[in-house]
Length: 201
Image (cartoon, rainbow, N blue to C red):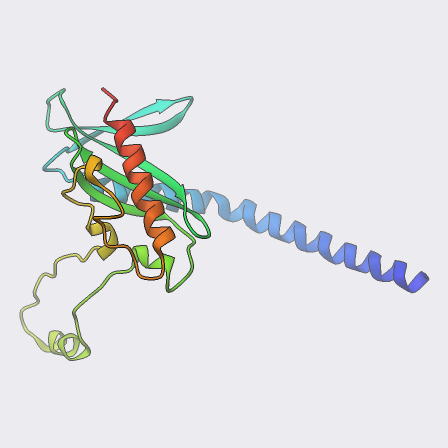
């Protein structure tokens, strides 16, 4: 009986020390994590709302939380578009995307902010497809003139650009093979939030 009690006590103490260490690490790293998340959001804002559509963004807050952004072009006070965050549960996590739309509802860009879907399946929503080969990469090293390469976007989210939020549907977006649930979650969240935003003035 004494051995069992001693074993329980040792196990309790080990878990207590581990919990304190984890809490300490979280406390130390949280500000840095928050800073990185804020930087990622700032970068995403410029990616989903091109300056040609709206070069000035104004956050709309409610209870101290940003609900969406209004986009304006130059010094004009006419709303050129909106940027919002759409969320929906996929196969194994909440998928969070940032979406830019023109005032008429045409999507200007989509960027996945957060996802923890199955690697090799649902996680392909952020996969970038490139036609570069090893030979072309080696050839590029020895070229005197460096070609400026176009930034390649994830092929799944790139499909949304140029479509109107009203027309976005899983039937006209190529879902990722083996990850229909993740694909549908992204499509549905963008359409639902986009239609909600179309009523905002």
